Length: 275
Image (cartoon, rainbow, N blue to C red; front, side):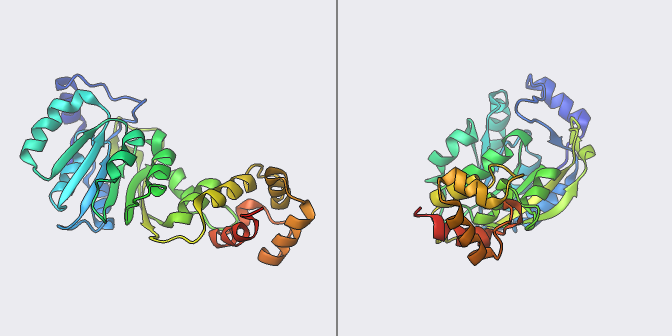
């Protein structure tokens, strides 16, 4: 169910809402991305879906028609009357009021053993939301989100163009861009295009998160410097020791952080984790 700009303006007027830049309120007015998201998440009758920022429910209504249960986090309390009415129509819909970045950990303990996250994310919380979800003790099996196109491209980057963001996401799962979404698909129209990003989450990890990210952050601390220097300075290690490890593990002491894969980083962490 797509909503036209005219209908969205009517709803905003009815509920006293002005689309907020602070909350990243850009509403989808095209059905095509919604269908792609539902399809990419393979939403079925046994699924519990976590949504973020349902707005007026363009994605939400597509999800409740197919899923067993939809739990949607919404911060805009002006929409409480709207969603009270919708929850009466859809018994498998539960709206959680509040900031998802603060509320997710508390509520995730109540999620079923397997669940999926499907959401049109406000741009300004994308990185923090992905971190919150991926670092949760109880992780989803799959994440399908609409994000800024440039962010999606950074997340799926290959060695040579890696960043702290791409390493962080690829540490937890396999990301893939499903489709590009032009800015004209939204009202109000944002300044940038979007993309639907799918992440299949790994269910097991052998390297501890704390050690991994402590070392990776040190490695990316200065992209202009060679990796050995960043690691030696950031971790207070002997430079020759670090150079030797890089030669042994990745074949070069002059490599830079953006050139390494997640597997390369895991090897380095195993060697340096106790340093």
